[in-house]
Image (cartoon, rainbow, N blue to C red):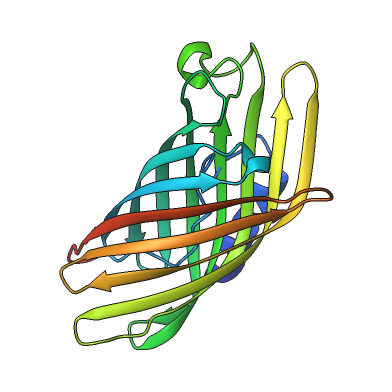
Length: 229
């Protein structure tokens, strides 16, 4: 008789695999906060601008992302361009996440979401000119954590504050390799209208042995409600 593995344990195992199998599957991308505010309802499009601190390269980042929710499961894909201070041009990075809601529902304002992700960034030469793989340095980002979000309903506006601690793994390769594991913490606020339009802000910090890296992000989003999702 075949034993069924509980969905929560299966999701936890998948997220652990993301953390340990560095070559397997970035969540959020360079210059943009790591968002873990829950599962999207239907399909949502997000636009973001990020402002990293000096340790993270300063400058600005622009990003567009798509999110989709399938019951307790959610996926995201993100594309960003990062223009560090003093850089000759913008650098492209890509990423995605897999999310699983372990607590929460339509009538429960609190949600708890597991998240695992992967991101790719090529500092020199840039992703645009150097392509993927050998030649220069490759940076992979693996954030794995849990997000706590609280939806405060109002007649015309839903307010959603959230906070998400995580393990933040960065692997550099090219002429050798280096893997760093640190504690990261993100948090933010979403304001959502009944029409599906909303705005959001987030702050993200990675705690290092020396100076910490941080980024503040602002953006707008629109959710498309799709029956059955």
